[in-house]
Amino acid sequence: PTIAIIVAALKPELAIGYQGKMPWRLRKEIRYFKDVTSNTSDSTKINAVVMGRKTWDSIPPKFRPLPDRVNVVLSRSFENEVTEDNVIHANSIASSLKQLKELYSSKVERVFIIGGAEIYNELINDKNVSHLLLTEIQNTNKDKEIPVDTFLKFPLYTGDSQWTRSSKSELQKFVGDNITIEDDVVEGDFKYNFTLWNKK
Ligand SMILES: NC(=O)C1=CN([C@@H]2O[C@H](COP(=O)(O)OP(=O)(O)OC[C@H]3O[C@@H](n4cnc5c(N)ncnc54)[C@H](OP(=O)(O)O)[C@@H]3O)[C@@H](O)[C@H]2O)C=CC1
Ligand SMILES: CCc1nc(N)nc(N)c1C#CCc1cc(OC)cc(-c2ccc3c(c2)OCO3)c1
Image (cartoon, rainbow, N blue to C red):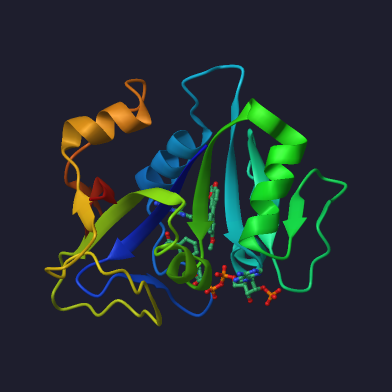
């Protein structure tokens, strides 16, 4: 299945976290994340979300496991198993994909890597990752500093980057027509845009 990274990052430094949490709460961004990671073109299939143990721990317990998606959590101290609330525990990316295949065979349409920094920075260079769904966030209030301490190490804007930004119509095709993609969404001091990147 297609493996895509999905992340929201503050430009220009591509910051994604602060003290183990998200530096912002953007209502429409959470809805986009939910819709894109839940939506399948084939209604008989389901998507999977893969995350690091710290990201799992940071999701409010009432919101996890993320509904209507196969949840996979990675930890180097996990046994490869399925927990009682149907979460796949894996101790490597490879074993998580193997378990997905064994348990769900052709039932999984897309696999979304949903964080956090350690997982992102390991997988951005993985040959199996074909797409990057990046929400590019800007701070419109130059008098306000946004506290951040966690960053993506993604080579996107360098000249020799193997990643190229797709058009808005390619993004629309990728996520499906039933998802509305707004331009320049403004929430508080933040302005953000949804983008799709793929490998050259
Ligand atoms: N802006 C955004 O879109 C998002 C931001 N975030 C932010 O990211 C931050 C969390 O990121 P981070 O602290 O890096 O933690 P992660 O969520 O990336 O989890 C790291 C843990 O995952 C496990 N792990 C990592 N790599 C592997 C591997 N190859 N095989 C098996 N297990 C592995 C380890 O677990 P163990 O220690 O148990 O061995 C490691 O400690 C938070 O601030 C969060 O808010 C998170 C998601 C989205
Ligand atoms: C939702 C933020 C987000 N956006 C994008 N573009 N990519 C992502 N990978 C993520 C993410 C994520 C994991 C995560 C972390 C978290 O706290 C650190 C909370 C949630 C979360 C997940 C579902 C929710 C919710 C919050 O509020 C309502 O429903 C989800």
